[in-house]
Image (cartoon, rainbow, N blue to C red; front, top):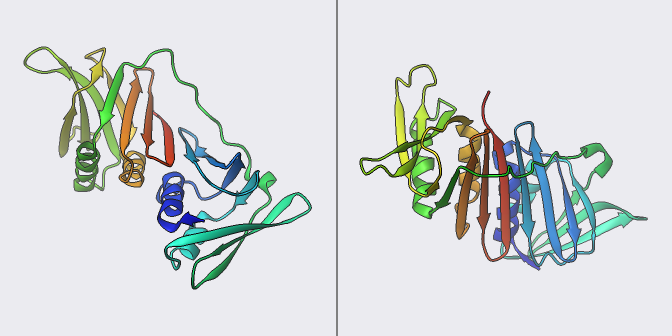
Length: 240
C-alpha cells in the first residue's frame, strides 16, 4: 500500500508540470528510482518503501497516469501484470476504484543523460520553506519573462551574498531581486538560468522538509530536496 499523496508527490517531482512526460520507473530492493530530463536539465527521484517486485516500468504518458490517479483517494494498492519478463500493465486500486494503466516498452523511451558534480561549488545555500515560497512569488510576479540571473555580490559589511534577479533580459526594465545568505566563495558570479524550469522544480518540492542549492561558476546549478520517504535531485545548465 502507498498513500495517494506520496505517489502524486513523486510524480510531480519528475513531471515538472509537463517537462518530463515519458520516463522509466526502476524498482530495486523496494526503492523506486526515476531519471528524467532533456538537454540542459535532468533529475533523479528516489522513493523508499515502494513494495513492488524488481523491474523497469515504461511510463509513456505521465499526464494520463496523473489523471487516472486524481480520482482515487487514501491508501492505494498497486500490482503489476507482465508477459514473460516484460511488465505490460499497472493496476491501482483504492476502496472504490480499480484502475488499469498500460505500460510502454522501455526500449522506446531511450536513456537519460546524467551530470556529474564539478570539483567545487562556489555557492552553497540552504533553501528554507520561506525562501522557496518567496522565489515562487517573485517568478509569478514576472511570469511573462523566463530569465533569471543568479549573482553574487557583497553587502555593506563586506559579506558575500547571493541574489536571484527576475526580469527582462534586455535591460531589466522590470525586475525583482531576492537575497539569500550562505556559503559563498566568490563575489563576482553572474549566471543566467531558465526561471520557468526553476519555478517548476520549487513548486513540485514545496512539501519537502529540506532543500539545498549549489552553483558552480562554470554554469551548473544543483538542487536537492529531502523528506522522510522521498529524495529529489536536479541539475540545471545555465542559459547560453
